[in-house]
Image (tube, rainbow, N blue to C red):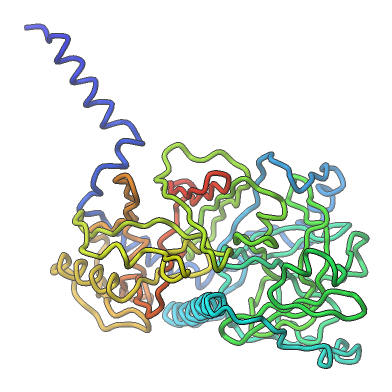
Length: 499
């Protein structure tokens, strides 16, 4: 018997629901997924022996390409709306590992991550305290010219800086690896002459070699926008202090920033650091992608930006995109602004689930209140997602309850839930998902929450508790996902497998 028109319409409706990306995102996440144990361990072993110089273009070749590009590409103004991209690389694809084994590499990463979280917490507490900011170095303690001529020394391997991009600075352009940071606003790089500079991959930037280098006056709006600044001979001096006690200090200037073949942006305010202690070994400095007025995104008036972070043990690269189209299959959530600190990107998180079951976490745990307490931020500089203790305990206990088939192992550093997966090629694990308004959910790949901590098969549940009211979605959870910040419409999107 032929199907009636009513049945055909119903069948068409069912097919539409099952194939529509936007509708399928509102369905509950799957209850389980598979972790490829062998692939994770293969990457872990490979990254220890990987030599960046053996597979990447040399500095001289990159610089020649940048100079050629900067001379032929038109300079765009700060209100440009055209899309452009930069290459995005993991730290290990730029810096050769000096660690004897993967366990040692993991320990170093977690130390950097703890310093990073401490820095964010300190910045937030300072913003909420309503206290006046004062420079740590006043006008009577500025570096003298003789201080600036002391030998360059290496800083300690502190601070976070897990993902780098290569940009051109100055005229003619010179190429530098810069750390990307959505939790900072001030752009800066190390400059000659150095009172104290840590070791970086590229030569130190020399201001005298650039015709576009221009100091900012103390009366400039850029100087006024700094949290910590001072003045010497009407020249603006900046200082950025990090929560682990490290800092960068020097002249606040404007310079031309070249963005590959996309063109260049002139008069970008940035710090020319002559004293940089305990910061980002390897990179020349930092590109601030936060929400404040001095960030790169604000200065070029980007309507949006997005990035996709490759696995931190991967030697491949992805892109940092500006003004690009919002992916149609993104799981979207509202972006919120704190009244106290404009740097961080707060996301409206409504809950979490494990194995398809929504956890019993009060909504207040994730809420940002009027005073600026609480909330959840998306941050590319923090590695491990931090959750308020109540939320973390609920998440961990649900995961442990659903993994009785997995051999437990002793905790490692900040991880209290670990497993012995040695001898296994793959394992089925419960799905972990973030939930947003409108029934939308972002399910994580298993490799984004069960990560190797040694080369022998010990994997740990990659979340950690925090006593702070602030929760942070870190870069381990973001790996392999195109994270898009639609600044014009105050929303963020997560689109898997878009690197």
